[in-house]
Amino acid sequence: MGSKVRLRVALCGVGIHAYWEQFHSLRPELLGYLRTLTAGLSFSDIEFLELGLVDTPSCAREAGHRCRREDVDLLLIYVTTYALSNTVLPLVRKAGVPVLVLNLQPRAAIDYTSFNSLPDRRIMTATWLAYVSACPVPEIANVFKRAAIPFHQVTGVLNEDHTWNQIRDWLAAAEVKSVLEEARLGLLGHYYSGMLDVGTDVTQVSITFGTHVEILEVDELSALRASVSDNDIARRVEEIEDHFAVQADCVEDELKRAARTSVALDRFVQQHKLDFMAYYYKGSGNAENEDTMSSIILGTSLLTARNIPVAGEYEVKNAIAMKIMDSFGVGGSFSEYYGFDFNADLVLMGHDGPGHIAIAEGKPKVRPLQVYHGKVGRGLSVEMSVRYGPVTLLSVAEDNAKGFKFLVAEGECVPGEILKIGNTNSRYHFSIGARSFVENWNAQGPAHHCAIGIGHIAHRIEKLASLLDIGFYKVC
Image (cartoon, rainbow, N blue to C red; front, top):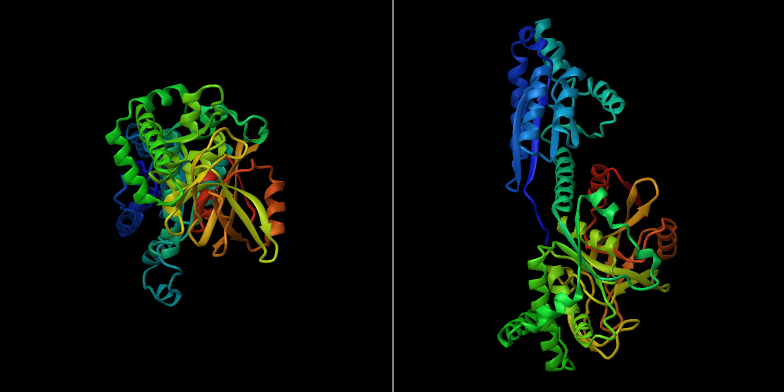
């Protein structure tokens, strides 16, 4: 799981040039700490631009120009000692990218006894200056606020696990932001008539997330189905049987019909270079289109498992939520809550249509349905539960001030009986209880769908919201 881009990150230390002549040992010491930071962040999927120790306004302007030339996505500013804000401001203005200020001491505390026993006041001052990274951060923050420049912070100790984890979370969020900016969202068909909550301003999607939106025709997908060969169908049937437990009552013709659509869907996605999709189409009155749309579920489930999430019912916002969860590497299955088990204090959630089979508990089943409730046609559907254990729910919801906001909850998918109706179905426990969870979730006004991923990653989603400058609300 997890669609990737190669994140480009610039890293510099900041200090003040006047110190170097006064305290000859200070600059080499700070450069050593900067090397420690660089070494700790040298991940294979990140391209680092090392800017060195920026200590004058002219040096800062050149570093900012380098950020532009190298097209970086994120700028990390390591405050090594006191630094003037007139050094930091031109760097950030020229770079023009999100900024993470690293306010990190070399160790958790000064060894007071050793420090106070140093024989030379100059040595004492130099030692102390290596610990004053906190001092200029209010000054830097003041200037950023006055210049309306957003910034983010990590405060702590260099080379400690908590610090590395915080920085990695920010890098993961920045990577997902870059994925969204590079992504192409395909919209196939039209809204499910009457679902006012799923109506989405796709212009605002591009404004907020940078995502390209491509409007697509079902007729084109139907035409591609006609060109799929018997050999293509046979190979895809084998793949379906690999990924799914095909139930005994699934007739061969239905399996071949789903395989034909799946092959055509892959070609459709490739032709339009799509990274994720939302779809819905009645198809009534056109036999070919009805055949296409009623046999699409297995193909969309396979695509979702291959990092091309597909949301049903033309739920654009939830396609974005699924893409975010998938890009964080935790899945993101299309879902909604439909009921309770009050005896066990659980919320029951699932959906017809595509499921994220890469995060299924066991092998997902394929069942035939004689009718799709509320939709045209019949065909094969996916039955599965999300993997048992910790989960995160994400809804991309409208926000009057920012366009969109993230609504998040953390809970647990628990074992137990599920409905065997050819849908994705899971049982979820939330720390605040089923009733409070639903009421608090509803109070934020989301659409009725959400994306469910494995693990607890609300802290990373919150950082992504901060980088996107949109709202974030955590229910539990």
